[in-house]
Image (cartoon, rainbow, N blue to C red; front, side, top):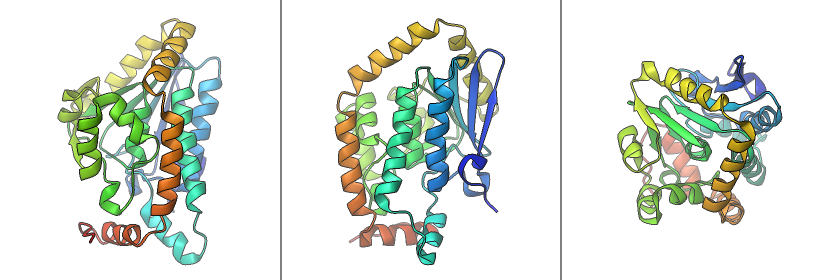
Length: 265
């Protein structure tokens, strides 16, 4: 049985305050059901508030960072009548990105494989991102009849500009680690075997720095770059709640589960 909620998260703390939170659902490529999505936001907020935390590292177990929403679980819950309401899911996604951005410590994303859907938003919300050479960011929202969520509609253009963001988001691009580095999204791209240590090395360097100065610097940069965050999250919430009950999304989910490319009319 696939772990869910806090049972799907592994938390490791070293002796200088680097806390690594690993999504541990490798059999689902670390796709997150509602319970795990909500728990991840709660854990990041709790860990970030602890005085002995200096840096948070986000990682995925196995060969993926996180492939976003667990469409298989959503499909199964829908057929059983236990589906989570779209607005509840969107609230959890928004809480997650807020937890990362409001954490008073630097957050590093170690992207070791595909990051898709809300997984892309999670990586973009981090203060620093490292990627393995075989990793990629999949902006597949429109491919399954959805719009960007988790703040991606503002996080991406704030990082790469409107033109590049529009190309990636409207076309549902898969962005290689090399391209992500070229457009400034990534600190470094490394062989898969070196990714974890590189992220930890960067985390340890930050952990030895002045915590309050890092906190105020992160807050200043976030507020300056993401002045439209709350409005963007509101727009995403409203739009995604409409799209999550659309025929295009139902067809998109069916296409993904059948492993064929969506073909919308």
